[in-house]
Image 1 (tube, rainbow, N blue to C red):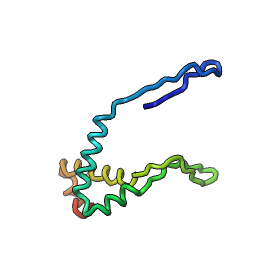
Image 2 (cartoon, rainbow, N blue to C red):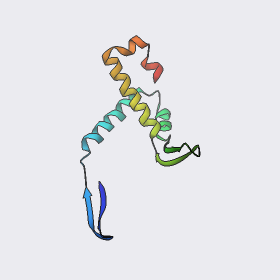
Image 3 (cartoon, one colour):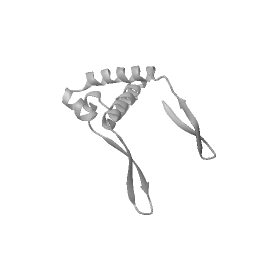
Amino acid sequence: MNAIPLVEEEIEKGILITGKDITDIMMMQNELDMAFALTLPNSKVEYKLKNTVEYMDTYDPDSKMITITGIIPDGGYRHIVNCLRLLSNLYQKGVAELIGIDKDQLV
């Protein structure tokens, strides 16, 4: 859901609320979670990944400083799931064998 204030001449006139049904996305995420959990050597690895944060940031080239703008609590887990999804696509196309990626080694 998203809520945006409607302002006219510096006076709040209302709020525009929009929503999107994410049932399909959540079902897909649950399926990926199950598939991923089955490929992990043990639950400690899954726990560690789900608790590895990822930081969103912006880089200022003038000051050469990075400013953290957000945190993805399970960022490490999401990256691994995405890697496994990409690997499964490579296997389907026969590319993984050509470049020598072994699923067990990756996991």
